[in-house]
Image 1 (cartoon, protein in one colour):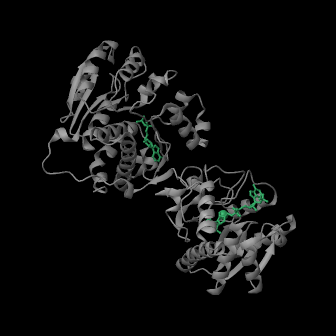
Image 2 (tube, rainbow, N blue to C red; image 1 turned 90 degrees about the vertical axis):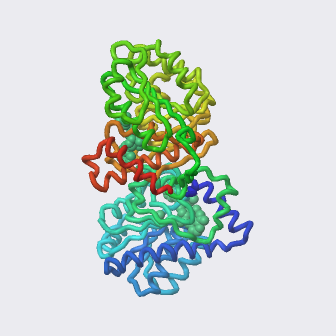
Image 3 (cartoon, rainbow, N blue to C red; image 1 turned 30 degrees about the horizontal axis):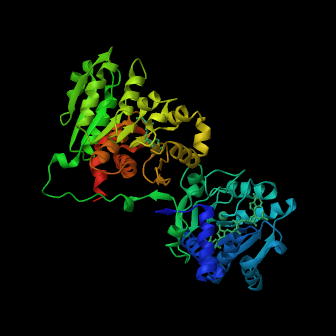
Length: 510
Ligand SMILES: NC(=O)C1=CN([C@@H]2O[C@H](COP(=O)(O)OP(=O)(O)OC[C@H]3O[C@@H](n4cnc5c(N)ncnc54)[C@H](OP(=O)(O)O)[C@@H]3O)[C@@H](O)[C@H]2O)[C@@H](O)CC1
Ligand SMILES: Nc1ncnc2c1ncn2[C@@H]1O[C@H](COP(=O)(O)OP(=O)(O)O)[C@@H](O)[C@H]1O
Ligand SMILES: [K+]
C-alpha cells in the first residue's frame, strides 16, 4: 500500500491543483467531510452528541471547519476553538471559517492562558474531540499555549479523532515533536504517512483510516514514492504447477547452531521447510548433529568440523562445497561469536555470490568489516542491538530514526536490510522502504528471529528476489505470530508456536 512523506504529499497536492486543475477547496471539503462521517459514526455507535473541534492556523485547521459545518448540519452539538487568532487564518481555511461563523456555529480563540479554563470545561462537556491543529505542515517542536492545549486533550480521556496526522507527530518519522495528541482514530488524507506506521507514531495515531479526497492515485508514482506498507495484497503467492518436483522449490542451506544453541538451528531449518522450500540442508557442529537430527525428519543434516561444540574454520571447504549445490543460504542463528566463527562467516560470505541471509552471530562476525557484503545478494536481519553493533549508532538513535538509518545503510552497502522490531522495516537496494503490518508483542520471544531467517531463506530458495523474499518472509512471519496469538495469546507464545502456524499463515497468500 502506497505511503507518502509530507513532501511527496505536498507535491501530489500541487500537481492535482495546479496541473490538473482540481480545486483545492474541493480537496479540503472532501477531507473535512470524510472526517465528519467518521465522527458521526463514532457518535452514533456510542449514542453521543457533542463535539469540540480544535483547529490550528493552516489547512489542517481548515479541514476542521468543514468537519464542524457537516456535523452542525446533521444536528450535532459542535463548538470550534482556534489555537490562533481569527485574523491569522487565510486561504481556503478562511473561506470555511467565514462559512461556519455565518452559519452561527460557536467559534472561540484560545490564545491566552486565561482562555484555557473555558476550553477545559468545554472539553469536559464534549463526547468527541476533533484534533485539527497541525497536519503535515508541522515544523519543529510545539511549545507555548498549543502545547498546553495538546496536554489538556490527552488528559481529558475522551475519544479523539485526529485530522490527517495527530498534531505534534512528525508525519515522516513518527517522532513526537515536543508533545502530540493521542488519537483514538486518525483519518489521514488520500495516502498513508510513514510516521503513522512506526512507533511511537503508531501509538499516537490509534486506528488509522485512509480517506479518499479526490487526488488521483497515479500521482504517487509521478512523485516517485518509495515508502510502502506491506499488506496481504502485496504478498500473493504464485500458484504451484502440477508438473513440478522438490527441485523446483529450491535448495536452502542453513549454517547454524552450537552445543548450547541447538534450538536455533532446529527452528531455522524447520521454518525453511514449513515455508515451502523443496529441500533444506543444515550444517551444524559434528557433536550436535545427532541431537538435532532427532526432530528434523525433513532436513538433511551435516555435522562438520568443530572445536568444543562450535563450528571451526576447518568446516570452510565443506561448507563452500554445499553452497555450490544450494540456491540460498542462511547463516547465523546460534553459531556463537566464539573462536573461529567470525573468520569462518567472513570467508563464507566473501567466497559466495549466492543469495544469503545473515542473522544473529553472522552479523556480529562482520562488525567492522562490512565491506565484504557490498553489492552482494545479501539480506541482513538485525534487531536494533545488532544494528547498533553494525553501525556504531546507539539503540535510541536507531529507534528514533528507523528510516534514515536503514536508508543510509543500504545506500552504502547496496544490500537488502530487514531492520527487525515491533514494526519491522525493510530497505531495498533500490532505496524503497517497506513497513510491515503483521506481528504482535507475543513474538518478542527467544527464537522468533531464527524462524524468520528460515522463512526468508525458503523464499530465496524458491526463486524470489532478495527484496521479495525479505518482504514475504517478514509479512508471513508476523502473520504466523498473529494466528498463534488467537490460541496462545501473547504471554505464552513461543517460537515453536510461530513456526507451527507458518502453513496457516501462507494460506492467506493463495
Ligand atoms: N495534502 C493535501 O492534499 C491536502 C491537505 N489538506 C490538509 O492540509 C494540511 C496541511 O496544511 P498546511 O500546509 O496549512 O499545514 P498545517 O498542518 O495545517 O500546519 C501548518 C501551520 O501551523 C504552523 N506551524 C507549523 N509548525 C508549527 C510549530 N511547531 N509551532 C507553531 N506553529 C506551527 C504553521 O505556521 P507558520 O510557521 O508557517 O507561520 C502553519 O500555519 C494537511 O495535513 C491536511 O489536513 C486538506 O485540506 C486538503 C488536501
Ligand atoms: N512487539 C513486537 N511486535 C511485533 N513483532 C515483534 C515484536 N517484538 C519482536 N518482534 C519480532 O520478533 C522477532 C524477534 O527476532 P530476534 O530479536 O532476532 O529474536 P531471537 O534472536 O530470539 O530469535 C523479529 O522478527 C521481530 O520483528
Ligand atoms: K491533526
